[in-house]
Length: 342
Image 1 (cartoon, one colour):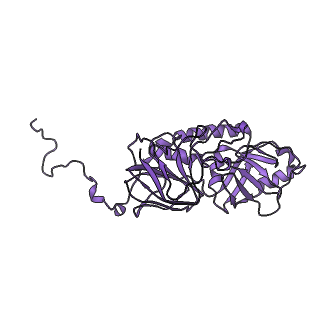
Image 2 (image 1 turned 90 degrees about the horizontal axis):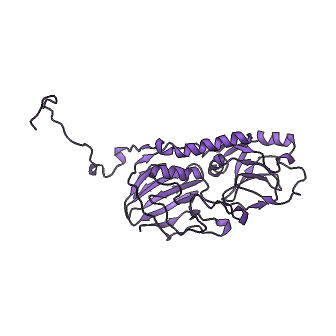
């Protein structure tokens, strides 16, 4: 079994996959990668299942090495990356030689980058998943010196790329009404959807605070509501009037009034909005939300067909002469229409 070694760790490295559905009634949210679209992109670039675990990198990556030649893919928030000093393209797949140093820097856009490996990270499963759920005490942030096992890689293909999605700059979030939406009066709801929020620096895998840059919002009855079940995407309005979007590692019950719920297809946009990025919220009917989710699922399945060969600048290929640049040879004098003896 091959391994990945973390030579130097960024501040928020963790193993993530699709999480643990089915445990909400027992007090555990699904968790998993905070940007599920990035998991699908990595799987498409490596031609493997999107259920395999990858390395989630919050804000910046670190330095890594492998004890065997390893296929990798880089997705999510773009981060400057080199392999032994040679620049690597983001949102693409590459072959990393054994012993080479893969260096991943600070996010140039967005918040969370992902390092995928061929065969996936093969750490022990807990409750059917390998994902760290930090608020539940499952797993932990990774540190320098940690070594992670890699599963058997049945693939061979690298050198593929996907168009970079536009979910890293904020934008409009589509939401449906939630349990306490009707506790906010019409004027408040109108002002809520007309407000441009800024993604507050106070954000993690549990929640993202939206700064209204002005007067906050208040529900009828204030905070005198009973605690009940909450899910990722719910928009809670805290005591100071600021909305919080609950994320993958959120708690399972809460007592703050919920003004709406961001649909799953737009959650990667919440997760990837960098500090200060503008965000707006618009309400849509539940039927429209279901159609959007069905279309998003089809789009994720179609990602493999969108992969194209990665074009590299020959100037950046240090071992250019090691490649076979011409396959076969032709004669400059022979008649191509003249039959030759067998």
